[in-house]
Length: 199
Image (cartoon, rainbow, N blue to C red; front, side, top):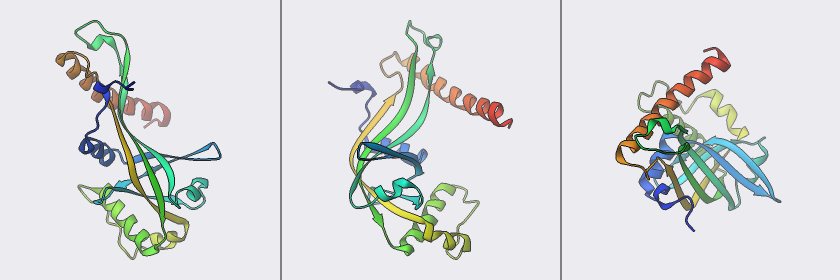
C-alpha cells in the first residue's frame, strides 16, 4: 500500500533539497525509552549531503544527538486549507502541503573550531542573498557561547517527499490550488501577526 498516494509523493532529491534550503527550520525527533524528544532547529544541508545543526547543551535532546543515534527530521514547506470554491470542478475540501521526512544517523562534532566555523557558515547561508550581517570569526559574543552549544551532523539514510498540491485535479484546478497556497500563506501570516502581536 502506498501512502500518501504516489501522485503526492516526490522522490526527486533536488526537489527535497530545495525544500530544506528554503525552509531550513526542522523538527528533529529522537526517541529514548519510548519517550519522544522534539526540538525545532535550523539545519543546513552541506556539500557532502549531510545536515549540520547546533543545539543548546541544556536541551534534554542534546544527549541524544550523538553516538550514531537515530533521528527523524521533518522540514515543512507552505500549507493551507483548500476550499472547493477555488476549483472549476466539483470537489471536496482538502488540505495541501509540502513536507520532507528524513531518517538518519546523528553524531556529535566535538571540535570547537568546527563549531565556530559552522555557526559562521550557517549565518552566511541564512543571510543570503543580501548578507546584511556578517558574523566575524572574532565576534566575542559567539566565542563566549561556544561552551554552551553542541554541534551535530546527520547522515541521511532515507528520504520521503510529501508534496500534496492537488496533482490529481485538472490542470486549471492545479494552478488554482497553487495560487491559493500562495495567497493563503501570505494572508495567514499577516492575520496572525496582527491578531496576536498587533503588528
